[in-house]
Amino acid sequence: MRLLHVMLRVGELERSIAFYTEVLGMTLLRRKDYPGGRFTNAFLGYGPESETTVLELTHNWDTSSYDLGGGYGHIALGVDDIQAACDGIAARGGKVVRPPGPMKHSSTVIAFIEDPDGYKVELIQLQPCQPAA
Image 1 (cartoon, rainbow, N blue to C red):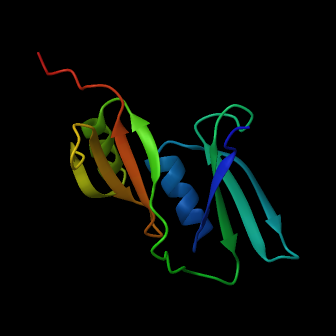
Image 2: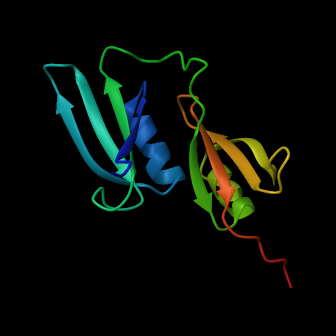
């Protein structure tokens, strides 16, 4: 077994696709409208679905926003340079809601950003940043 995808319901599909492709650098892998059900699915990721876990965005045509509820946590992305990632995300219009720093009770460096629908995305530093020479 392997994890295939994570699904988020989004209010404006084009806005969300733009965020995940232009701000976070994902690729739109496929998209399909389901007129009978009045929804569209879009799959995005950093590699082919056959090899990597991807993100499914579901847009129900008659719903423009969702109550995120108290059960949702976040999506996590590993990055090589968390400060550079946050700077780039902010420069591309992304919202950094928790700047890079150590996780509470740990030395792991994390940051949080927020997508256009309010979903949190955690960035995790994969390797220590090398100090500038």
